[in-house]
Image (cartoon, rainbow, N blue to C red; front, side, top):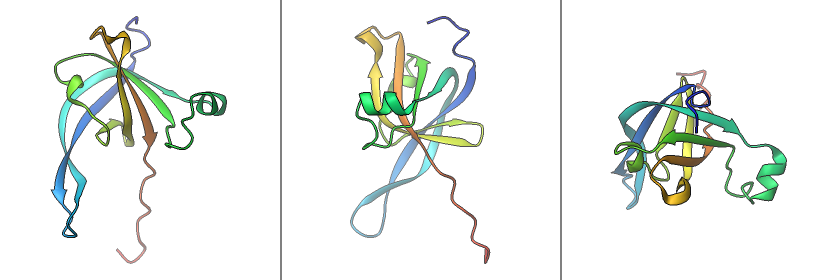
Length: 117
């Protein structure tokens, strides 16, 4: 992939699992791993239908160069583009060549601030 398509500055955030006080684990907090260049492409409705992504909520495909840091990303980690958060649903090492990583993501809807806060 040429450098031109990798025009977005992205922040890779690895979620830190913590106990949720109900016997489970949650990933509310995260550790910033790196700032990288990448591409962010929304999926069209036809692409979502064709690859069966509607059920999983995938809304975007993000590509970054493979690196010793980016390879640590896993489902439920996040990629930030400015104030937009993309939660990783799936990770693929394109052609298993350790050149590009493709992330299937769903854009997280920002929580609405409660008027009483």
